[in-house]
Length: 374
Image (cartoon, rainbow, N blue to C red; front, side, top):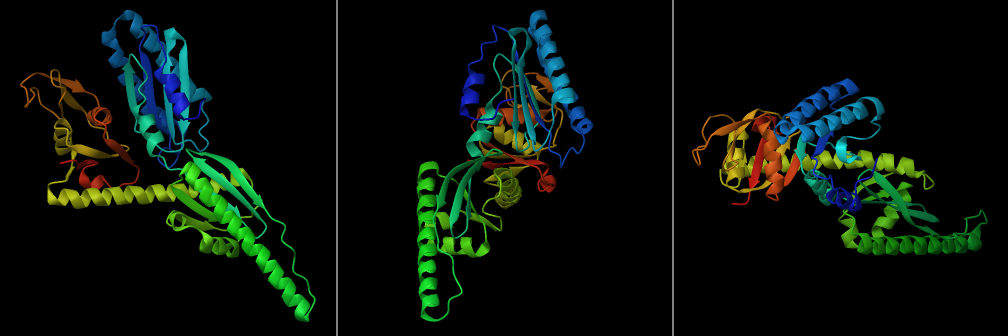
């Protein structure tokens, strides 16, 4: 198993399958949608059938290799794969070339099956480019730990430790002097943390910031943060400053999921608004397929479980829900098991952003729609 990063994508792009096809399967294993392994195994079987149908015209040797891919993928998902916090699984195999890779990601993937001369990497490329980097600062009045989280991984990248004298119970002026001394040390510590956090942002340009630790400490830190960082604060949580990296990651993933739901709602709301004008948005399968064919879609929104049979023009590649003859060029149409999957592939190829909607927000809009370029 490999973690998703640019190095992995380069490795997969450079695969040499020695003339054999590569089978690429992208599968959602999200526990919210599929509580049990048999639930997503049913969907896997459908994807494997699609992959085999794509391989049948390629000749006996290619089909034999793809059948080896399908057996290996099925065995892996059923026997070896343990879901944990994985929500999306990408599998790449070229059996007769002895190539295999499995990639786990912490967000759902649109279910897809592609048999081609090379690995189908566009969904992972887009995920890598659009998945936000999150910084967590865990701070009290003596210590601070800075974490960076992305794609379900977390790394502690920096810490700040300052000796702050403790308060004591002397009375009178001595007590007041000591309190001022302690407060001065605390202020200097918090300012150092704010400066370290700003340096980290300039180096790694994180998108979201989570303030963690005792509430009093991160409230004081917030007052010293640069405006650029204040604008990136997404949550404030109470957490022990010596919490484990695993606990910090668990809380971060919970917040990330809330942010993801909010982003989905925002994109669906925008699609609803622009489509109401009839100019900058389109909803429903037929209208969206037409807009894709015309190259007008800037962002495609699609419900994660939407699957509809359709057809593709054998000459110009236009996708439609049904028919026997292409309305654009008059050529014959060929059956497509899932025209939604084909539309997503077409959108990727056109450089569109594809937003997978897990919630039911798109149901009233036909499960699919596009925000248009023109």
